Structure formats: structure tokens, C-alpha cells
Amino acid sequence: LAEHWFYYVVVLIYLLLGSLTVMNMLIGVICEVVSVVAQVEKEEMAVEAMKYKIRSMLPQLDADGNQMVSMDEFKQLLESPSAAHMLQDVGVDVVALVDFGDFIFNNREEVSFSLFIETVLQLRGTNTATVKDVVDMRKFILRELASMESRLGLYDRGQQMPL
Image (cartoon, rainbow, N blue to C red):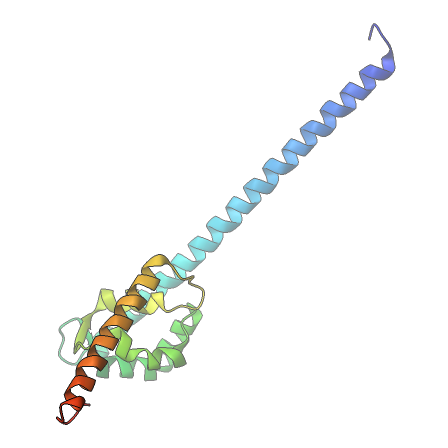
């Protein structure tokens, strides 16, 4: 104030605008965090609701009562309109899921309920590909190629190729 009152006003305006800018940035960060947390919570609730609904349907579909999901039980589950709608609500493409039945069961007669749910949730369209997914795909392709080579080897030796 000893130099000129104009400099005092400029410094006050600078401090006021700087404080408002920092405050607005902090509010923006807080809003973004709240939005992300709400989205994660909403997805977790939808997944838990799906697990609960499938668990409640499992005793009706589980003919042998072993708490495992067989291919027939899987098909019955997908034929249920409420189960199909619930899977669609969580982001699973039900039509594509029918085609992935072989992938889910992977040469097994039955899978555990937890493995079944985990695999179905990995097939949601909202999921992004991870390194684990690429490694799993690589293993699957190598296994299929080895199977194909063994079948072609039998065919080259004049034996009938197994289907």
C-alpha cells in the first residue's frame, strides 16, 4: 500500500481468482471420484443380484443336486426368460453366450458354480482385454493346434480321423 493502491487491488484480485480456481479444480476432482465410486458400486450390486438370482434358480435346474453346472443345466438356464434378462442387464450377450458354451465347459462335463459365474462375467461386453485374456487365448490356440496336428497325423498315416 506504500507504493500505490492499484497494486494492492491487483494482488487481491490475483489471490481471489487463484483461490477460486483451486477450489473449482478440487470440486471437479471430488465429483469425478464420487461418479466413479457410484458406477463401481452400481456394477457390483448388479453382479451380486445376478449371482443371487442364479443361485436361487440353481436348485430348480440342478437335477442331481451337486452344486455344479452341467451343459444341460446351462442350456436350461439360458432358456429361462428371467435368467436371460438378468444376464443381459449385467451386460452379458445372451445370444453369444450360447455359442460360448463349449468354451465355458472346456471339455468338462460340469463346472463349479463359482467358476461358471466368473467365466460368464468375463464375457461381458464392457470388459476390456487384459494380458491374462491374451495369454489364455494363446494357450487355447496352441492347444487347438496341437489337437489339429494330432488328428492330421492320424489322417496322414491312413487312419480314420476322429471327430
